[in-house]
Length: 394
Image (cartoon, rainbow, N blue to C red; front, side, top):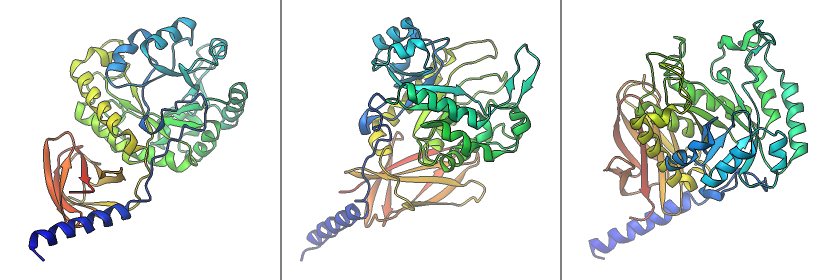
């Protein structure tokens, strides 16, 4: 047999082997159980913006956002009409206006408060009391669900999810055992922590708290979808703001640790208050748009089951661990890799079940690598992200 025919035969066998290895993966959508929920099928990956004016919905839609979460003193009839006109859906409070619009597909979920796990301000400005007990959150969840079981109920928790020492929990600081109880009071659970803009040295600049929090919340969520918040402004810091590179890292760090939805926090109090600071920062707006567009393109892949133990990264520098996740679709296998520390390192990467010599496309970087039996090497800079795609048939 001629050498060329042997090569073709080997590649064909490799492709069949590779397809068989990953055949167990199929797309799933965690929102299909609700008739009026986010839905969207396998093409939908939630990319939300927190508590923004509906007047700006078109600009957020153009940046790749597909969901609003929270409406200031709403929902109101006017707010819902503005969102409908912009083609933007919302998760909002279940107030009388919301219930009057129970048949409106603009509303795709109900918000169940924000950060009940933090110490709560006392009436009259007399300081802070303890967090809301989980049992009250569960009871509230049952009331919301009884009024409308056709939509999911979203609960957002605070930074204690990721940082046990968060003093903002008051008497419940260092009590992570509360969180499995809180998640019983929702259908979708989220949390927020903003390391770049953080004012405490225990967290400031340590982006890995984002991934750590997602990982913990996935463990506590008992199968519920986990979302998380992403920083992209100064928030309350005069000096520090995440760079586009750091925002991209936090996004993909979230996803590879199991986040099923993203919520951008775009408010800013320093150097002055700006509710929609992202819209007034052209460089960050462009960067977030690119990030969101990439996620939208990969949504069917991201909604497919993760291939457990499907990939591995061995960094040359032990102090720069790399977290990976493997997914697939009908045409390719994907390895998503995120540097979990700020340093630089070279790394050996591998994808199980990939045989022979193959070209590895590095998405959004205009370059390719060559792999042998699924193994290849690459370099990682501080907080770097590389998204690798290996076609099943080459």
